[in-house]
Length: 107
Image 1 (spheres, rainbow, N blue to C red):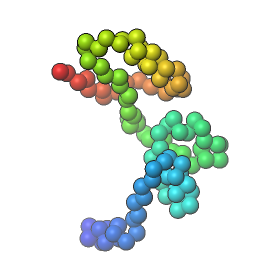
Image 2 (spheres, helix red, strand yellow):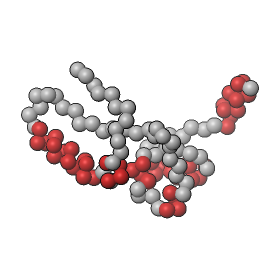
Image 3 (cartoon, rainbow, N blue to C red):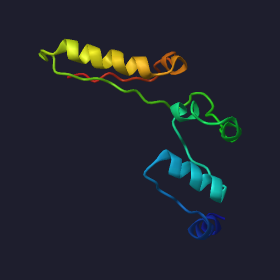
Image 4 (cartoon, rainbow, N blue to C red):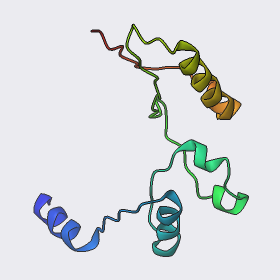
């Protein structure tokens, strides 16, 4: 059985790569495939495309964006301004996501 599965996967599974999320979405539309896209992309999708979106079961994968600076970094106001700008552009729904399985880096 394993050998049959291996043989069939060599001939019938295709893997595509693209430089943009829109390209991936169009390739899925044309070829009836699947892809993984960030939740943020779904906020701009029309309702007819949203019908095809499926969400992960818990625990859903997520990523964290961090601002990391040296302890002696002197431009704290610049970093604070950047942080505020980033947070202001993130939709409220995403800001409410709770951190899970975050492992702090210790130096």
